[in-house]
Image (tube, rainbow, N blue to C red; front, top):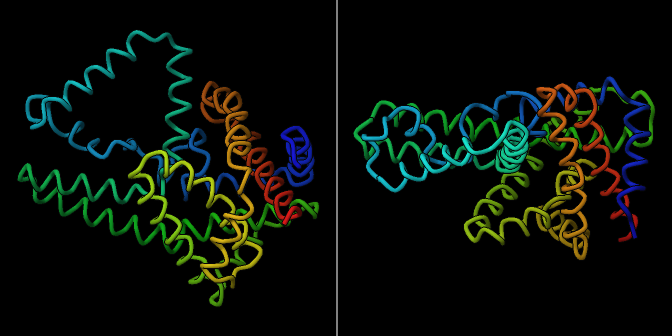
Length: 288
């Protein structure tokens, strides 16, 4: 059985051995894939939120929003924030940023939803532009972001065993014989997650059930879809709740990262978190 302290202690050693390259790898992941939501403003961390109607709220005045209940909901959220002190607001932002990161792979779905709403409001040009944006986001997710996430896992797995691991380890994932298999399996994982999130609780459970798929692909880029999903499910059986608690244990660090405008996240928290989850993967693999 594994415990949080042991995982974190081992992760700190990995980060110490590969500090600067680990920072660069995590920075690239944050910038291009939306990993580590509190760190930087990247491709996925624009002003849009997980709220699928964000563009309407920005572009339309309250009186132009057709659904009055939605407008009232916005006002109530603003009123709630006004009652919070600065520390509470920063804590809320830390939670929102990490939730934003968790749902990054479904953002193109939200963009499509926005486009539909814009068409309904006779904003055809904006709707078309948003559809194009959704297509670009979709293609970027499949071909670059998801394989890059797997490449990041590959780096940390190798860094666990070697000092001075080079960044170009990530490039192995993009080899012709590996690229499409990894991209297609990660795409299916995102689709399954999105569908399960329609049930809310099911989405959370499945997110943890599929948690080890990128690590499995990092070590076995030719593995089949069926094998990857089955192995991740087997590894996470009985470990979902403990992994959730492990994730929660980093919220103090995320909060400190927000207080330092993401600097602490870039320089320490992100590599520390990535190395810790890699340690979890290696421990779960030993138990199989």
